[in-house]
Image 1 (cartoon, helix red, strand yellow):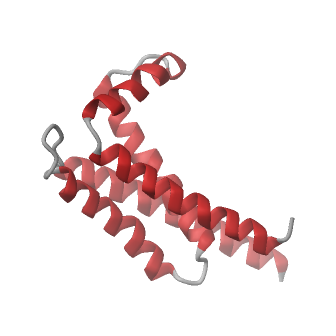
Image 2 (tube, rainbow, N blue to C red; image 1 turned 135 degrees about the vertical axis):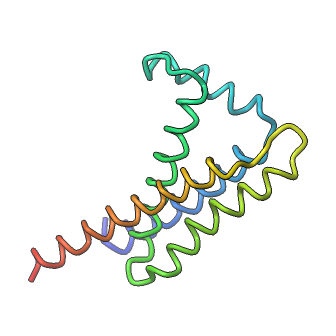
Length: 132
């Protein structure tokens, strides 16, 4: 598999992940609880709020890493996609009947996305220094 194919695969994964996040954020709350109840035994049974914090931070960190590798020379675009996506999803969530967007959730997603972008940029810098 060539490096172009890997970048395409990462790009598709990044877009699919943000689409999944949009669906999970804007769908009925029962969907989120169903995922939680299936994952809780594997995660040592955290309470729902702890799970939500973990999910926001880790999910957007992964999204930041994927978009950073998908568009390595477009850092501003990546920041707009990840951070703008986090903010937009929280705003849109306030329009749903059984969900509510909160500032804390938005800040968790922003922090996770920023950490993911920084991790990816650090890895890219390390690999470019090693290659030269």
